[in-house]
Each structure stands twice: as C-alpha cells, then as structure tokens.
Length: 258
Image (cartoon, rainbow, N blue to C red; front, side):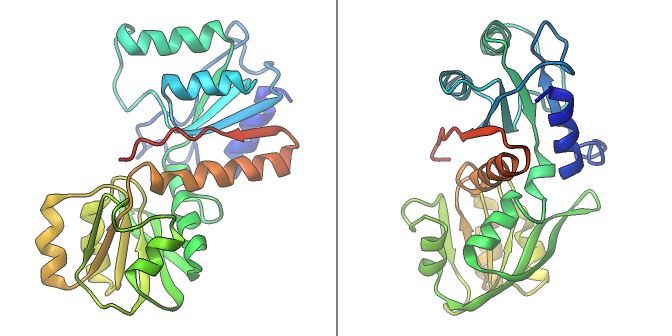
C-alpha cells in the first residue's frame, strides 16, 4: 500500500490535522523514505512503539518494517541541531529507508483505541465520558467501574502491583467506584478529578507536589508509569490497522520502567 493511502487512513481515523494548534509534537510524517518521495513509497509492514529511539528503530528494522509509528516522536515544538544522538537516529532511518510517523495527543484521546480509552476498557469502565481539559479539549476519560474495587484490584487489571507502579497514594475510599484517566504526564490534573468527585485518578508520572493535595482531599491516585500508561494506544492502533488495511503490523516493546 502506498504511503499516501496509509497517511489518509490515519488522518481519517485520528484528529492529526485538527490538533496541530495545541500539540507541538509534529504529528504525522516526521521522516520520509524513498529518496524523500513519501506519497509513492510502498508500505508492506508497520511497526508500532511508544518512543522514537534507536532501540525501537533497530528492532523495527529487524522485523522488516517499512514504517514505524510512535506515540513520542522526535520533535517537540523547537528545531533540533542535527548532531549527536539526533543525527544518528536520522541517519539510521534514512540509510535503512524506513519512515517515521508520530501520533501524540490524537492517540491519547481517541475514544476507541487511545491510551486513555484502552485503560478504561481494561478496567471495564461503563460508558466513559471525556475528562481532563487541556487547551480547551478533553483528552482523558472518566466513568464508573462495573463493581466496587480495591486499589490492588485496579492495579492487577492494569498489569501492575504497588511495587511496580511509580507511585500509589491510597488516600481515598477503599471501595473504588469511579475512576478518571489521563495517561503519561498528567499528575497535576488530579485537581480536576477532585473537582469532579472521582474516587481514583490514574496517570503515568508521579509528582511530589500533589502528595498533600491527594492526602487532604482524600483521593486515591495511581501513577502507573509514563511508558506503561501509553502502551495501550499503540497496541490497539496496531491491531486496528491490521484489521482495516490488511497490512502486517508488530508492536515493539521497549519499556523504560518510568
């Protein structure tokens, strides 16, 4: 399948163009292939990973991928000098004729296969509603669990334990009925969960500055790790792409523990 068809598919599936005004991560094509002629480049296999790093590139190449789609790309709103590790990453992609494609906020917030939707699905959240305002757009979800659960039961459904999570603050009810989720770097958004009277807030990163806020407002919080809370979207998107386009896909797991 030619790249322009794949690009049209992803743009039709996710709000890649629509989120450009608030997302500085250069969603869409980041590194071309085929001597720079992206539109006509033939793609037979797409690898999916959380991070644009050399290990992801090398393992995608070993798997025979023509394109790597990542959640965290190479660009974050400012130009980068082409030297050091950035030079080596670009050189590797170009020499191996492999495209790099990114989907940051569009993948976080997608209601079916985004990171936050994936976490809600794993927990069995009933009728998830948008949650967590960011520049006027809600990027997370909240809702009720199918039955009251302990924080350890929630962790288990996420493939975590209290020891494996970055942080667990069990300051609220021990019978959790409602949850709110913003994957990755959203610890400060616990304030929105408090305002909306949620029993448990789930995010990726941990933060010292919210400890006493959680304690004094009696809310539970799980910081599951930035990486672990953002594997859901790329895995679900890989499956969706395989089913919709008939292309071979593979998930490249490069955990950081953070």
